[in-house]
Image 1 (cartoon, rainbow, N blue to C red):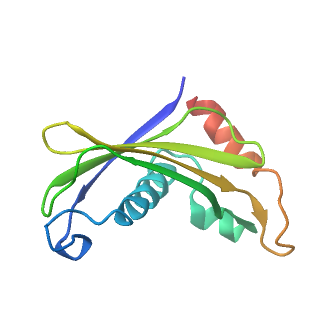
Image 2: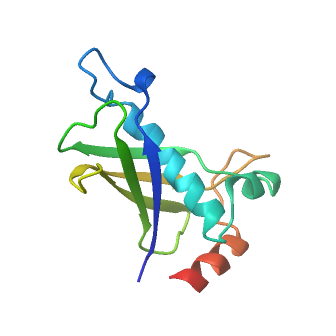
Length: 136
């Protein structure tokens, strides 16, 4: 089983290039929006809560495959999926679709758990594990 969450984002003018195509780096921003909203809205454990509890989650790996372009003013659906419980790292998978439900992009990010005070790797918070276990 896995957790799947969809977020809709309208491609804004400032995210496009001269051709009206969404600039490639903006897909990474879309990934961040999707995973943040997924953690907030699925009743798991938000970034804000983790940071308050002394845990940071820096991105340590990004993969992105561009299949078809996204264009200015298209309503995009960013699907984020968690397939397994985190260990010292947490992996998120992404699919981005246009309004015709065509797959435009796939991606993956890996985030590490870091203690805010020591800046050293740590285990994921038990609260997050418990929340995810209830959903997976």
